[in-house]
Amino acid sequence: MPQFTLPFKYEEETKTSGLTGLAGLPLYLELLYKLNIFKVMRNILDPH
Image (cartoon, rainbow, N blue to C red; front, side, top):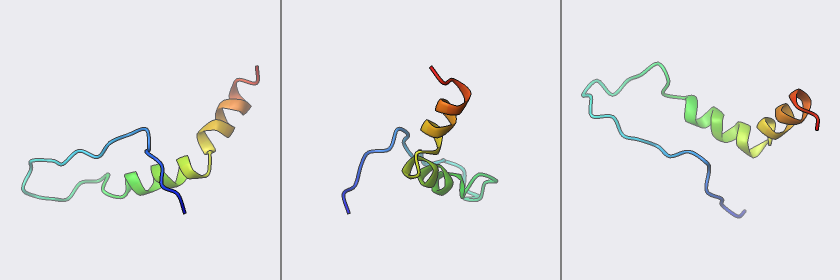
C-alpha cells in the first residue's frame, strides 16, 4: 500500500504530563483524509 504525505504535521509537546484531551484526534484526521471526507463535504457545501 503506497504511503502519502498528509497535509498536517505532528508536533511534540514539551509538557511533562503527556496527556491531552486531543490525544486521539490525529488518528481520526488521518482516517477522514484517507476517506476523502473533506472533499465530499466541500462538494456538498459548495457545488460549483
